[in-house]
Image 1 (tube, one colour):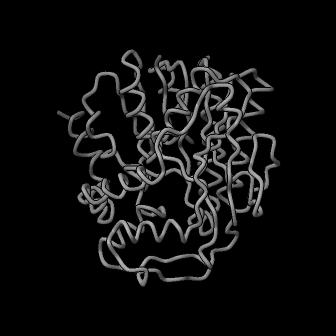
Image 2 (cartoon, rainbow, N blue to C red):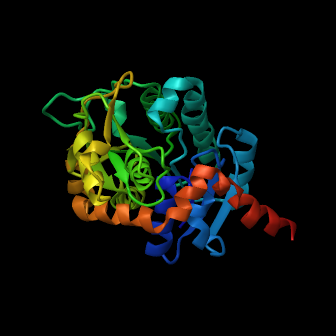
Image 3 (cartoon, rainbow, N blue to C red):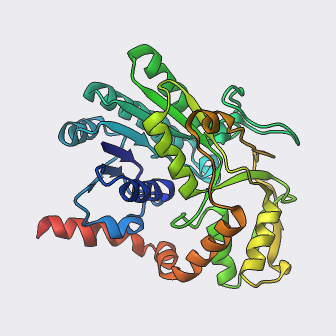
Length: 339
């Protein structure tokens, strides 16, 4: 199979590409990424010379460019990871999220429809469901109640995907996943952000009382789930992907502080952010029952390995902090093309 992965230079997209190339010897991947601040080609430096891997620097909102890439590469399936994802940034600049997450999805859907792809898989988030109380879980039938501009833009994209399936008969699928963690995650996200702060001897900020609850899944388990849905999911369906690991933010913070050998005095409580959802929890019975997908990475083991990865790969996140990572495209692609 030849698949086009939009947003493949980001955290989850790059881990998915690495997983696919390792799991399927006869698959090839076309990676399309605009390389915004969160797109980092260093995430896939070891794949730059793989004949089964092609990269295009392009904006998914550019319809003409997407048409050109689809016509030239002829993908059989599309997996759309491309999105602005940081809630705090969506509060500062909602328009950017609407453009990328909604318009970009519409452009990809049109390109996929016109090129006759066999599968279009939209990668979504549990944040489209809003916030839970102390009990219960989100199922695929839960009402959509987004509480941030980011979540609203992803909800809109999900509904657009559904509409293309119903209106045009495009074979669409949607996955909604809980919080991911693992290697190559941009250091603005909680786990790598706190690890890097603690590494530098700085305090870590905890929103509000720290009792917000999230369900955590290792990015490798998420990649396995996406692979299963891409191959065996029923067109038109939504599949929740959960880790079965509900943890409060303060619990995660304490685990990271302990893993880094620091004192709990490293915690600094700060005012809560607007629209901060209290609890997410995923009911993933559907994907378990239909596709046999279950998380394989134990949380404590996965978290230890993730912390170790950031410690062992300090040059990677230092390059992100300094902005040096943004020169990877010029060093590995532009100069190669000009040679």
